[in-house]
Amino acid sequence: MDSIFKALADGSRRTLLDRLFLRNGQTLNELCGHLDTTRQSITKHLQLLEEAGLIVVEWQGRNKRHYLNAAPIAEIYDRWIGKFDRLRVEALQDLKKTLEVKHESE
Image (cartoon, rainbow, N blue to C red; front, side, top):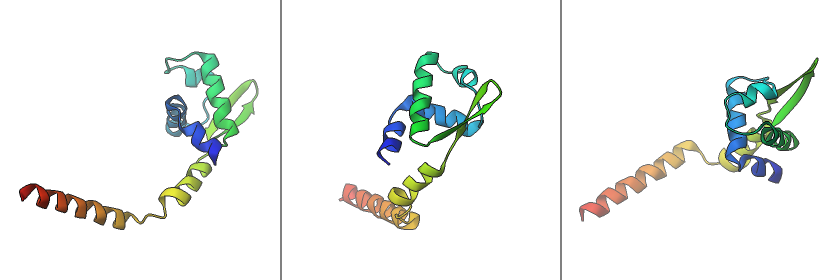
């Protein structure tokens, strides 16, 4: 899981994942098209994402296509986020706001 967090820590890699979420199965050239980064840098980012299991690569003839693999992100959600019931979190947020308003009016 450390490699997943390391991969997600970089904004450029998150941008690549966002682009794959919008249109899966892009080549390196397609991914480079809208980013202001060198091709070599994007290649390194993609390699790290692949090593973390966040993307899967498939060769189609000469083209190497990159696909988002959401399973590791789902594991993070299940382990670190999902255990917090949304309703409880919202109730705590509402309570905090109420107490802040009450404190300000005193």
